[in-house]
Length: 507
Image (cartoon, rainbow, N blue to C red; front, side, top):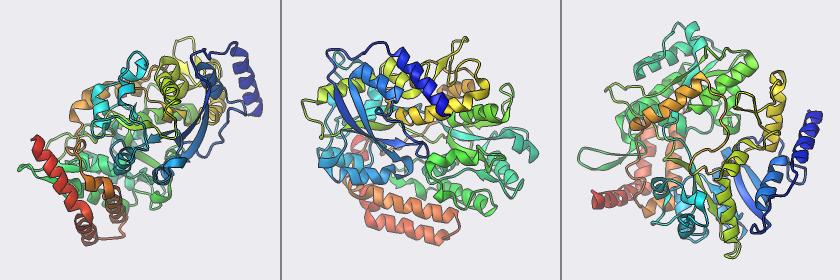
């Protein structure tokens, strides 16, 4: 492995024939805080010869000083960080574009108002090329305090191992919610040492996909009289929780799922034999799982054994898809620890990050080092002819590229060289377009509630914790309803009233 690293470093240094730092690029060091999805891997710094960071420096004049925070702890670290504005990083990812902590921090003046800069197409053409509607979705009081991180809208769904489903006697992909339930319980009975749904600490996706698929609203609903109510009080939401609880009781969910970090979420799938064979998550993880099986288990790319499922009609015949995002997954904010004099240089860097070179660098790294273009014209993470050794290159990529894509905004698309097309990638890309019509939204998303800003995150977390306890059989339905009642008295009723007032003013 060390020999490989040395060879690749030598290669990239040989390719660096000239500095790309132009006279107009101020040479700066930028302190950045990012979520880390490779916290179990070592990180190669610029000083240690990281070729990706070296390319960024040569292209922009920016030396990145990155504070990596494990994704599972990022929310907690965000709270601690914004509580001390004088010691905030200069640039940081905020994962919730309109959650309470983002709104309160922006209103407190800890982030730069970027509105006038973002829409300056002459100075920042890449940022200005972003989606106006998505920028509107992340606006706070009509102002922009960050650049959104673009994400495909209809990504959420289900993927599972069809070869194990066949062992359980189910050969067809589910066509409705009831068939999906039947599949889950059939798989739960297949092997006592194998779980069905792969879950981890990040439970919002699993619970959200399940409950919305069964007919519940997303976060808040509006009844036929125009009254706003919390999604967890919808009967379909409870149906979803009951299903997960029943599957848990049947041995279909790892009882230790709340100890599994999101950075280790793949482990239960990518083992031999797998410890879990289904996941409710972003479907692009499904096609990557199939590709992992092809690389590591010899799976046939012409006959995928990972099935992708979405757009399932519920008992009422309706199709609903959980909105994994609102066209964005968080945003990149510039903190007031950046001086007004330094701000244009920082924004020039963020603009470069959404250029073709920037997008490619953050998502893929450097050609000839962390990716290669083969004779078929597609991008690969290993040199042509190195199929047998591809895992070595992937390991190197994880330490050098790490989770730099978390800084990527891609506001006008992923401009990286295209990876080789596969059956599942084509299916996924086609369904992103077709399924957009079924994605539901939170009717309160762009409405203001001061109480939600002050305490929404806290009381909503209490509700989610209780839902996890309910799924795991730690509390019964009465205990769950008691937590819901507390939510109302501890601020929920005020949130509902404030949202209702804002909603009625519009409608």
